[in-house]
Length: 399
Image (cartoon, rainbow, N blue to C red; front, side, top):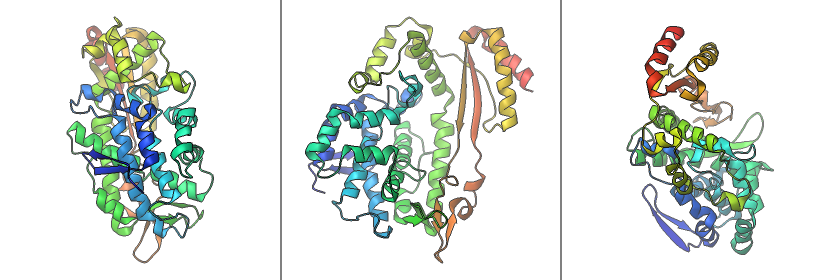
């Protein structure tokens, strides 16, 4: 790859970009990501969390080629391992563009598109739009915008499925970058894991049952993979599901709903929205939810369940909600349901190659990955004047 630009990154050092990547980076579509915070409202809790989706996109692109280089030689000819191959350039382009469809404040208000789509579908629309597509026509050198869409959303064959897993799978470069980057900027250690060891031990492995190719590790990399899983688990429990941060996300969503704001699904109109335009409108609003965010006076936490609810307890708690909404007024309450699997390595059929060559599912090769429980927690926030009464009622009802 002949570099035409380079960027100094606090995680990865210098990141180089070729002509296509440089053109994409300089486009308004990518530049907009400078004004989309990576962690939505989390900067109101973690003062350092001012980093953007833009720097994350560069980091993911960089790591995509590192993973590609680690696995291509062992893919039995499925991937062209040459430094300037179409495969390598395609996966870097897909990694660079994977987040361009994020609305303002990232995941905090992703459910408010005009149509029932998510940021990944919006990403596909933007890549297929005239501006991005024309950059591939001029600078792609064989890499096409449509190929990127297939890698990100609907891979057509084994080669594209393997490239897709590099960008968006259970062992992907998206997680590898955001865990380290978010941990760094939030000032926490939870996101740390041994990136270099993990990359050194990654392989392309063929599923012995389905014959599909996927990402896996040598047996010597199992502990590095465990570190990645634990880093993700702790970042969700301590940062992404932070009790105060979730309150501000709920206030943001309530304000957007009250205002009737929806994110456009037509690319040109969508690109006019970012954190700054939304924040400017919120600062001028007299809505109590807008003021709660702008003045940092969110509803206090009245009650929270334990972190790992069973299915029966989840159903039991949900059964309490209609009663408290009727008594205290749904408009005076905000209810957060934070739920996440710590990993899906079993479902994704990720393998470790043992020293004798046999493949073992990672949940068997690891002594504790298979035992991590799903995060499933409810929190109830309430207007200040009713918070203590609500807390007492829920404590009595919940037992």
